[in-house]
Length: 358
Image (tube, rainbow, N blue to C red; front, side, top):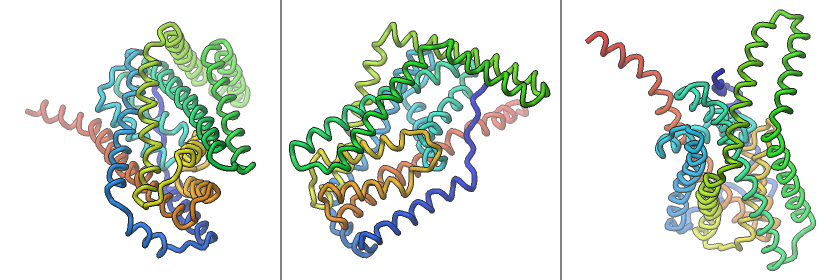
């Protein structure tokens, strides 16, 4: 069974536009007009901003290498360039399709199985699950460090404290559940069996053959997935190397908004950056099926910056300048990567046909 390619619908294309409208309506409530934002941005120092752009490209590179270490450990052969393109493609899909926490990973599973066969599906899922677990662990650590720094620097509002505590607890519980199910193969098999029985009952036996085939494929993938997870358990060296590269990726990612504030000549504390960035990343990582890539992150960032002492005009400007790098630039590069990766399978049969004719 080959992973299906996530579909990009017209509805998905509307989400970025709706999000932008919501954000500009929100900053209007803060009594910050567009002219003020433009004027503030025009006086920004370009050097830190250019460095921030470079950091964004390097962040994705280290993120890709981190995932590649896990994939290669499971005999999924990916070059650095190909893993880099796969991650850019997933970023493009994440922006368009709701529940970005799973859509980008789904497209990477699809790309691997399309190229290397359905037998690699279980290993691909395992590499992504472990990578996600490492990211969630780092998210908890950075949240706690940011909260500690805030306590040492200023009085923390109960709302911010409770939000950090709630997100850290939620991530920890989710992480525990994912780890638990990752090593309980019989539980997953029982769930698959129950869903298959339910499908046969609801279809009154009409889909019995198809459901039986789906069950067999799913059980094979689950077994491959759990075998791969056991490999990581017995040989954790790959996890250590992956965590190293992922940590570098996080450092670069967190440096981007810090550099943006420097370009605006309004340096802020690292605690503000750590808390704001990790709260946004934590909420985005929850697979609730709602679009969180455009609009809501900008509103969240502006609100948090303002609540942590940054003037509303600077908060809105820094948010937009950061998102130009972390969203729209990445979206554009992701689109290019998507075109390159989708063009290759199309051109391959044409090239073969030309060779045969010759």
